[in-house]
Every structure is written in C-alpha cells, then in structure tokens.
Length: 216
Image (cartoon, rainbow, N blue to C red; front, side, top):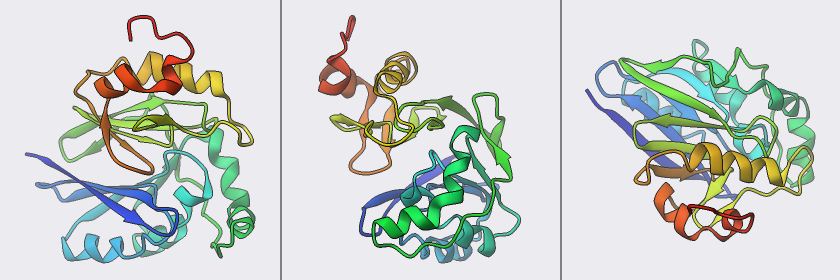
C-alpha cells in the first residue's frame, strides 16, 4: 500500500495545492484549495478518487479560496481547519476583493482539526502539528517523511508575521520545537515555492537561526 502526493501550482499567487491519496482505497484529501485549483476536481473524478477531506492549513483567503467549490463538487467530503483560524472564513470575500479577486464565501468547517485529530486515508494515518505564528491556527500535516506545512516554513524563509493575528516569536518557536524535531530527511512541502528538507532548513534558514539556533 502506498500514498501518492501531487503538488499543483495554481493561480496568480502560485499557491501549492496538494492532492494526497491512498492508491488502494482511493481515498483522498485536498490541502489548501487555492485560487485556480478548480481543475483538480476533474483529476479527482477521472482517477476514481473518493475525496474525504478538504483541509486548510490556515485561514488566509488564497488557501481557502475554493473551499465552497470543492465542497459543492464533493458534498460527502469534510471541510477541516483549526478553530483559531475559522473566523477568517467569514471575511474571505472581502479579503479577496482587497487583492482584486472575486471569491465566493466559504462554508463553515465540518470539523475543527488539532493535534488530537485522528486522520486516515485507507490504512495510512496522519499526524497534525499545530504551528501558530503566520496565523493563530496554522497546522502541518505529517505522514512518514512528508510534511505539508502551509505558509509556516519555506525553502530559506518563513511565513509573513506582519499580518493581523500573526506572531513572529510564536512562529519561530513552533518551527524550532515542532518542525525541527522531525527527522532531518523529512521533506517539507510549503504553501508556495519549492520543497526542501528539515535538515537543510536547520542548517541554513537565516530567519530561524536569528533567534539563537543552539544545536542547529
């Protein structure tokens, strides 16, 4: 049994939208259904996948833009995000308009996700790490040596912390104590840009090292 992980670069903000599925059960999740990700619905249907989860790693509109689209296309799926970011969905249309995008409103989450959430596709279990800082309710989704981290950590960078609700020190602390606790060969898949590994970031990411990287 194996998992497949696809990264689709979508829309004018170059969002990484992830499709993760179990090749045996055909159960799938879509992570951060951003602007321009509509075409992935056809990919799901043609591959005979069963979309079980729509998961937002955080509440910023470019990552939640197509929540309603995918929920309408796959009504049996469950929309999930952390409770601390759920309020952002209420202003998605207004926030998108500020950046020149016409967004539908997002439905309410079917379930709040946290570190205690049990998440499975077929026989494959996933761990949830709570990574606040870029937003209060940021999460990472972990399976084996693959980590989807939203906008918390990038190749050579970290998420913005000049936005409402963000907290620079909280983000650095979460990266150091949670993400950097993962094995060095863990592959990091961010919300924008190229993938990296935990080991590379521990050795060279200047934004995390700046707060005193004992042992890193």
